[in-house]
Amino acid sequence: MNKVQPAYHPSFLNEIALGKPYNFVGSSHSYNGIQLVNDNVAVIFDSNDLKKISYNYDTQEVTVEAAVTIEELKLFLHPLGRQLISSGNFMKQRVVGALMTGTHGYGVEDVIMADSITAVTILDEDGCPHTLTEDEHEDVLKYIRVSLGYLGVIVNLTLRTKQNEQFEVTQQIFQLSQLTEKLTEYGNRSHAMTMFPYSDKKDPFIGFISLEKLNQFKKPASANMANAFITAISWFIITIIWKLNAQLPIFQELLQTLIGRFAPSVEPEVIVTSPDDLDYLYDYHPMLESERNPSIPRRILSSTYTAYNIAVFIPKADLPKLLSFLFDLAQEMKGENPQQYFKNSIGVRYVGQSEKSAMAGNYQQDSYSVDLFFSKTDLELAEHVQDLIAQEFEIRPHWGKTILKPEVTKNIDSDVLKKFSQLREKFNPSNLLQPNLGGIEF
Image (cartoon, rainbow, N blue to C red; front, side, top):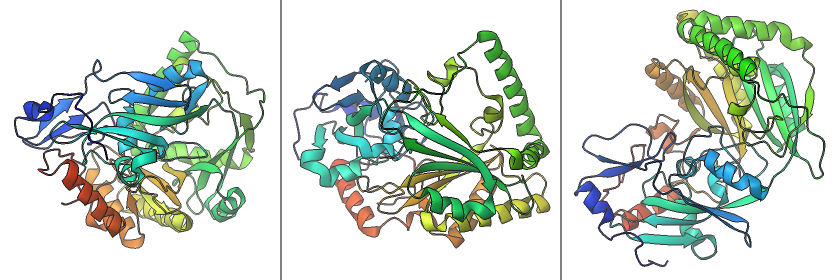
């Protein structure tokens, strides 16, 4: 590994922290979590710092500095006819934060975004940069890709990109009892689903979406371009319903009951996406979501702004059993205390398995990510539910969304943790860099 000449002053980090532990904070989904450790110095990647983006036409790779957001990177790539291989849903998060915590997206390859990393420049605790490349340092890079902020400060990274693509998207709704049959039918194709635990008391409904990459151009579905007046009215309706949902748990049961009532009449729908879409790959409307009319039904059922979520990774074979377990638990919770609801739906995304990111929750294990939503004031309830899941299933952490406990981190391969610890001793021997994800003890 080459220790290159410092592009930063050698005492860069020591001068900032004055010998105290420190952590680096991005904006949302930063790679050290969102809360600050007592007595630590928080170093902010300001919006004007570390914002360079460059594209290599020979390799078709893009290099970004640490403060670049997903949205900024997509806007940079789009005129080049390129896009990210996989992308998370949240456009405002830093690219570095998303990758260093193992954020997943939609797509048919490299679902864990970090898998597309081909090079990283990292600062050790003395502020000296090390550049690691896929060709020369893959044995180390596989731990740097999802490093959680423990191994050093990432100042830039290089990603593979792909040509703007189209997908054929199948949307359908069915009941939990049909899940195994559907999973057999769709196999390893990219897919995600949403279970509505209060839609039916015996057999809840699941909204299912699958993606298949198109090899030749097809005319995309027609898109409703943004209209300021319609958009304003739509967001007003959505905001009112979100507020009702947050304050009145029974309102969420009513919404899901309506889903259960109308779901049997909903026919499967196949749509073709636009290669110009900058937001969600499964959405056929081009542009950013903020630039088009929001879908009222879809946004009403979104939990992003109404609840706190925890997420875990689980082996593919265990998914039907886990969803049945969660459905029974949801009914039991509601029966014991009408206030103890899963808020909104239960989100499920197929993330396959990673061979490139050793600390990812799906490393060498075909997996799903399962998201559970709760009221922002119900953190104890969220922790209790995770404990119940951990007693029944061998779950792995979704870094930054899992409440990290030994019951979860023990399911990471011990050899992986040992190697990760050895690298931490190399780059951060004094443990000055202290991200607050917790769950790993050195």
